[in-house]
Length: 140
Length: 92
View 1 (cartoon, rainbow over the protein chains, first blue to last red):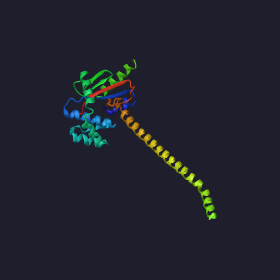
View 2: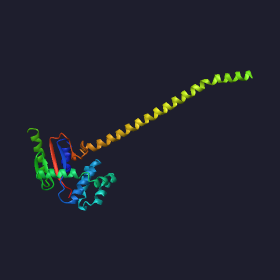
View 3: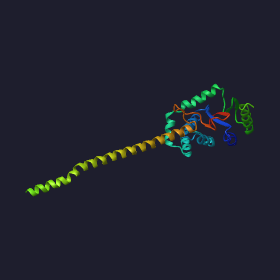
View 4: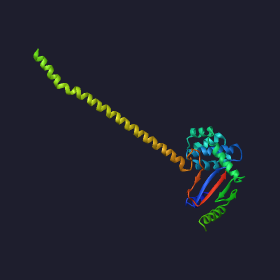
């Protein structure tokens, strides 16, 4: 999500962003989602999430995921233990099933107060959609 | 001989408070040590409770853990925001 949208709408209290894992592009996709949830256990989901996107061209091998964990300051042993336990597979799987039930078939997909936007969108599209949703929520 | 016996009796007479007083002092000292030790345990336990609470707070602060210890949805922003954007995505 654009930092401009976060500054404009999240910081002002208008918008809340919720993340759902929809790892549909193979093993590395699932591994990255599980790694981000392991980071979440240590309170650093968003830091890890951002770093995954910034370095996505380098792939998501296990070694790479551990290196990123170290870079964001996670307890690496705890991070490894989380990955090895598979304890978050159910959480990621539930997100994926929820997306399928909603008819999601590609990423990113955004659902803004019930309105769906598929694929990357320009800033102005987000602004219009958020502001319309805000007016409707306020009865306008 | 009689003088010696009288002297012993006088010495015993002067020392009897020590025979009673020393055990009492010892009991008081042991009791004080036990109570002081118990206080330290309490302080340590309170510290551990605070650490545990801190860990839970951090975990739940970002919607990280739900009541049943399963991870919740990562989120940003006010829980009462009028607009909610749910993003379905992967990292590829």
